[in-house]
Image (tube, rainbow, N blue to C red; front, top):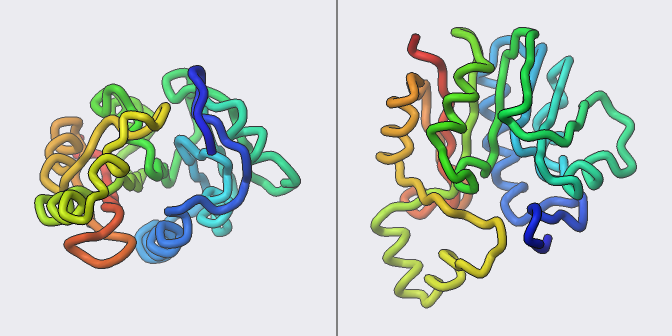
Length: 207
């Protein structure tokens, strides 16, 4: 991947750094917590690799990304049932009932996570399960990042279209609650807690 000044630029459709460990955890969640597996909407699908790995048990799958290169890579040499769409979440509307919405390593890229969650609220009903993952941050993990000399790399402002929000368990709980979601369950993925690479929450609407 490389960045340009217009969009997050994808140059391949292979596994990215985080995909292997995220795939295992998310597939576990889908297998054990998603009762109905008719429709899946994957928000911010990137190059489509992870979408293809987590959607095998769903009947109808739609995957969205704003990046033209992401959707181009996702469709490359692919003839499966996933419908890949180049569109902004705010421009996407779905009239059908959605059983599951995934947003994998996306919310940390958004300027307004509140607006992002409000749109997910609009798309979902009381039965929809929403799976959100984001890089995990805690005092201990951030201290280790500093002590091992990796601060500039981890929080790099040089990564075009990179991470601009950094969530702890507490702040992720707070922002989901104030947008009328309840956390059904929390998972950690990559390495081991309390220095896990990502935190994953399963959400449902509260009202």
